[in-house]
Image 1 (tube, rainbow, N blue to C red):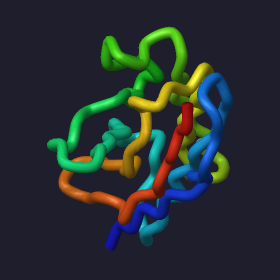
Image 2: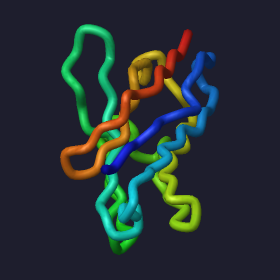
Image 3: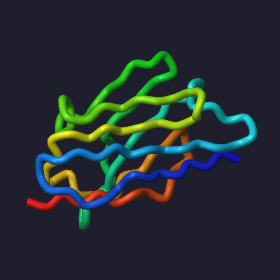
Length: 113
């Protein structure tokens, strides 16, 4: 059974940076043969897609984070990352990693102005 565990959230001031991690585990699960995604959900809002990394390593980003966030993975560690720079108060949300129908429990990012 696949499990995803996010970490790295915290509180930062606007303009700061954070790196989120998503550690995947499971008897036969490997992130390098699965498309992996980051989503986020701000208080009072619907969950929204943030970024994707495909099996081939292609990446895609929501317009709101393009140029500021970078998604990557370390296949040897079975871990995906989200490097977040130039953070804005509107980036405040719980961030979730996802693959297929599996979701982590999320990690909270709070950006103060």
